[in-house]
Image (cartoon, rainbow, N blue to C red; front, side, top):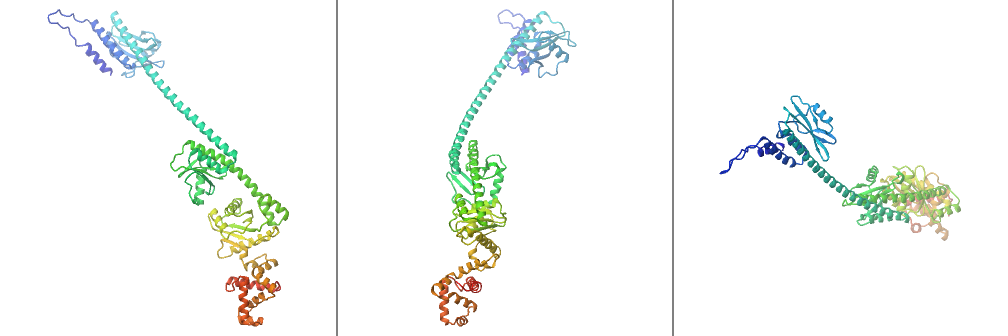
Length: 582
């Protein structure tokens, strides 16, 4: 650009010759002084036509010869309080020149350059102060006129630098103003965002404080969370079973959790500090003091959740954690009281005290009870497994007192358990079917509970030694095995006989009949009709009639192998050990 401007200046001032007007006088030839002034005028236009300070300094240096027999040795611009040589010069000025220029401290002064008779450092000063320096040399000492022309060139250059400097400052000020306006706009937006967030956060705090104050629990928390976010909210226990759901889209039935995947998900979420996205759900763990009590989640199928949604979810989880921790503490106190009472009942305790304590923990001991013993092959009988058994029992509607022993959990249940319900519930809870449950006979008084506990253990043991060792076994369905196991006594024998022959014994007592004796003789003769009739001194048809009546009265089928065996053992015990009495 400097070269093009130099060419323009040269074209503007050179190549013009005096002309003769047709029919008029000749113009006088232009003097060197006129030519120099014309060059300076053209240069001044170029100097003021550019806003670039480096370019202005370059133009002045390139056209220094327009003022006389001068050479531009160096040019300096003041940048940040220091004098910097003009960028783009072919070679840097000598260090002695740069040192001399700095020594002048803004004043003009002589400069010594080898091979030059005359040298001068000329300050480029404007109203704002020093803009820079021109270092000019000459092989001969300049005349007064040449000095004046050089002074004019320096003034033009200094003035052009002042204008350029002012223009640059205006541009910088405009840029700074735009930056400040943009920064102000950004700060205003941030302030608006902060105010909005604080407002939202206050709303979240207020709503959750209301929930906590009302003691609303899980349902109240999910309702509040659904209102704040517009997304379906739910709570699951740590095993993945739904506890409460608020909002549309609830699956029916709710999918049965996979224990392995549930543990995997809990471990993945526990590694993160806050809410975690897993598939279409945004979840956070409910874990006061590090213990995972459950999962609070938002169903976000469209991935709409923002930072406000996460804030609401985390505040809701904090509120729910306090509530669940409180409920857990209450449950632990209640469980301890239940265990202490159950332990005393199994060991034998005073009835009056037992009834009062049972009323205090909300359990009715006045009804018939069953003792239930639970053992699972892959679980030790620790507190965790005891809680699992308690949850499963509650899920199938069993009202019970619970305690545990070294290798099994014991329930003192207020109702006869369903044949498979508790076993199936525990299989779901534990993820395996390798478990055994033993159930005692009915217990109508507190004093019978220790004996019924033994029955439940014997039922459990009988199941362990059976072909299908996993499942539920009832003591009153053991038949012959009830009197074969360890710990049987005279009362057990009586109970067994009463179960199988009680109807016949009562019938004989009321009608002075001999149904039990007939049945005993029938078994003694190996089921032979003729031998039985002869031994009893009755007719064969009478025996057939009596055996039919025995089936009707007892409700047992003599053709059934199991019934036949139990009836035969019962009649043998009745005759030999009980003396054949009612």
